[in-house]
Amino acid sequence: MAQAASEGAVAPPGRDGSASLGRKPFAVRVRRALDTVGGRTFAIAFIIVLYGPLVMLAVFSFNDSIVFSLPWSGFTTRWYQEALGDENLRGAIRNSLLVASVVAPMSVFLGTLAAYPITRLRFKLRGPAAIVVAAPLVVPWLVIGISALIYFSKVGVALSWATVVPMHIVVTFPLVTVIVAASLARFDRTQEESAIDLGASQFQVLRHVLLPHVAPALIASFILAFSWSFNNFEISFFVGGFDRLFPVWVYSTLRHAVNLPIVNAISTLVSLAEIAFVYGAWLLITWRAGARTSKEKTETLMDAIR
Amino acid sequence: MESTAPPVSEGRHLRARVVRTLRPAAFLTGPMAVLALFFLAPLIILLIMSFRYESLYGFQTGWTLDNFRALFTDPIYRGVAKDTLIIASTAMVCQLLVAFPLSYFIAFKAGRWELPLLLLLVLVDELNPIVRIYAWRMLLGREGLINDFLIWTGIIDVPLDWLLFTKFSVILVLSTSWVNYCALPIYASMKAIKPSLFEAATDLGAGWITRWRRILIPLAAPGIFVAIILVYIPLFTDFATPGLVGGTSSYMLGNSVADLMVVIGDWGAGSALSLLMLAAMAVVAVIAYFLTKLNQLD
Image 1 (cartoon, each protein chain N blue to C red):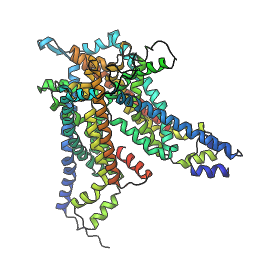
Image 2 (cartoon, rainbow over the protein chains, first blue to last red):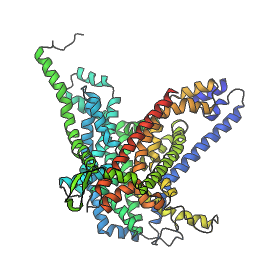
Image 3 (tube, rainbow over the protein chains, first blue to last red):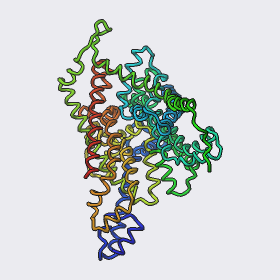
């Protein structure tokens, strides 16, 4: 028991932990090593399945052929030129960026506005309010999309990118509320109280005590809101009208199966931009939260997205 | 130290009460107005539409149950509903089977791999889902890379046809699209388990099966519940994946709704069908909730 227990205290026990009594430490170590190797292989396979298709897409966006298959027919950047020269595609990207840049700040604003009273104030309708705010998160986007389609036509509003904006906001700000509320709930209230005891005004408390604490959550919310809006297909599909947004452009281009190589090229560009965007935000969040070690960073990450 | 608070007079008391009721309202009015205008109002219109009868150009209108009756009597919808249920449930099970051990690995075993793996899980969510579906379509096709590779290595002579535009492709692509959403809540709930619990169980002679059954699964149950709610609903209502990588055998209810709304223009039937799906999802949520409860009592 002594041996296994002391080992178990260092590393969390796995399948082998039960072995313990009287077994050779060597056998235990081999099994533990196999366990780790097995776990790592599994994780790597998982990541390959998740990212592999996108990597292949990027590689083949440079292939000088209109079909996506071997043999390799030579390197070209032709598809990138064609993609960037395509009027429809440029319009779709422009629309999506426009919508997302309105949706993200509005969602962060509304979401934070809702998160504060739900976590910080006591009032009778607090429980119902929280449920109502969270409701859009469990209603499928398909249902929200078609209900909005019918709604706008009954009210007599023509569909365009401008009708997409409120619909994206209404599904995104509850997410911000959840993230910011979780961050507020974790906040130690005594800090606020001591600030007040030391003579800070309410604004000063908000600015110097509360804001630094929720800043990572706010940044994460902004990134999530922006990419939710930019990537949203279901709602944009129904309420975009003649203003195509990027995911809808990809979908309809693929449905009609023309000009596939430019889809490869633009998909690669968009994915790279998204990765850079998220990574930049991640650096900003860890810097704001002052996380240095890997453990602190993991905690920051979970705090920001939970 | 003496408290600095002044004695509370009747007037101040009243004012404090008013402030206490008005402050939440001041914060919540904006968000609630947005929800009322763009979430509740459209849903109410949807509900009304599903019970409406409208002839072409709206000459005749009235209330009816025909929209629902058609859905229940038409064998086509029954078939589509069955396929949707099979596809969504299989994909859900596959994801749980992958996400659960993966989350366990990340939470307890990964060591310095923990952070990179988590970042990759979060990052993939920010990549465009339509692009991700499209990438799979390129790989799985008759002349796609997977068939190319299998023929090149001599494993097969003729390209496999069942890789794309089948139930298989839809289940595979749906699973890879959502598995990160499935893993994160499970990971979060596992992370909250104290490793000392496992040590104690080990010391008491529990094997890994017992440890998983009695500690890991019950304590991770809330995470599994969140994962099912988070993932099963979009799986069940998806129409982009079957639209891009599905064939006739994988036409899902989401496609029916989209086609009814956009191609056929039968808004009554489309509304009715989407409401039925919403109701089905509510049932799923309740079942998942009780299953989790049951497991915790064990």
